[in-house]
Length: 270
Image (cartoon, one colour):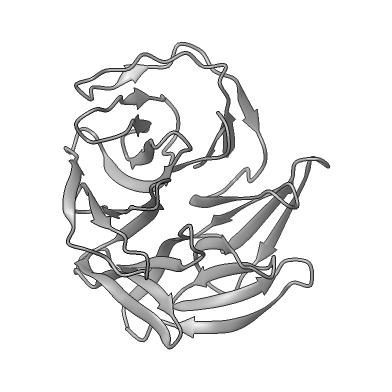
């Protein structure tokens, strides 16, 4: 199910980071009913379209907001993410490959491949300079064989290694920080993002307990806030500004990795 939240909801913040209830909200269903594992919502502002994926059913969903029309396209493998390309085509992570996909023609070409067995691409996003970052995870969700990669001129370059499941990344609006989810480690790490695209030494931004759930998808909003979906706890929570000054919000809804869009609208997949 695909859900959209607007600023019709009233929330109460908590400086200590404890979860508080949403008093009221308006929910709009967009499509994707029957999804097994919906993730990676992506807004195409030029076309007024929303894309997202169903990993296990190997489907790319596209929803035209102006027409109210949905389209699902079958892919040859499990998808990990969808991102925009400068050509207005889409970049898809499919199994271990990066694919440039034309959703109109329904055709794709291989861009690159992660040369490592026993993993699959899991999540990804472009930073403010247009560089593509994407993560991988161990197929059996057991070994620390996952990593976060940056796509360079010669192919994928590992930037963060030795994680079981990489999620995110997200990029601060001031372009100074990259946030990365070590999902099975139950933590979000923050790295200085240098202008040339390399990372400085990382530090722990936030740890989570078993009661909190597993940190999954992330995005930064226009106010400098970091949003993260907590899988397995049926919540989504938001932090404002820094790890020391934050508010946590609880949404009693199915497992939701969120992505804030421009303005006060949030889009969720489940």
